[in-house]
Image 1 (cartoon, rainbow, N blue to C red):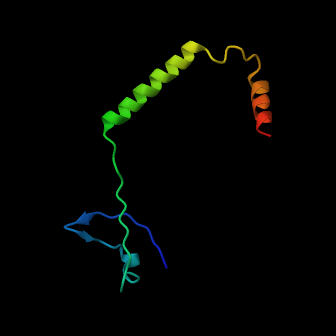
Image 2: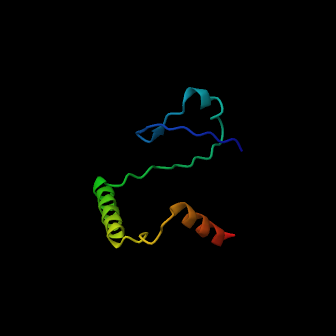
Image 3: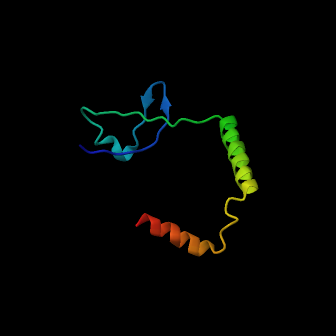
Length: 82
């Protein structure tokens, strides 16, 4: 099976196939429709706001205050993976 991908606008239920694909678009075709979902801007703003609150809470807790040498700390953490 040969597959191509392109974006197009649908008008009155008709899909315009770009010229370079028209010759191959003869006969039986399998059509898969993928529509990009757009989140409302308010949801995106809420996510940003929530993330900002969480980062502020982390900063207040100062969870990394006991780390004297960040590079050495990272090496020690990586050694735990092996």
